[in-house]
Length: 161
Image (cartoon, rainbow, N blue to C red; front, top):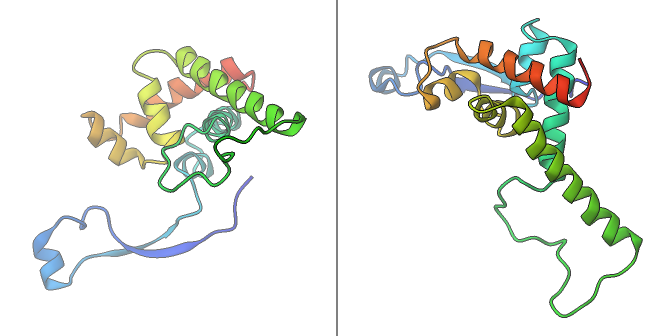
């Protein structure tokens, strides 16, 4: 389930906005695996269980299959205007996409109010936990506790835990 590591050298998150360190060139640098998701990172360090990881991956899969991510380019797979696309393949793809969207929304409903935000930010958008905590106005290191509660509810919904 782990992807091949893709390592990148980056400025340490604490030094990213430190103007003095940036000007002096004394910023700390860290090597990160950009192929690793925030959930994968938590799982690799024993912070979430296998069932929680599986539930999070199912949610992310439904998010991607449902085509719910924002598009940044033109949709090349869309049928040309005025042309009919028929056959089992096109309709099966559309039904699969609708099912994935429905499952995604039901899963977030199962997570409950207040927990769906952290699910979307960390699992679907791939936002780092400290960034999600900061954006949501939460204290440092509180997001993981909230995320584990949400992942337990998702595991119950998906039947992985």
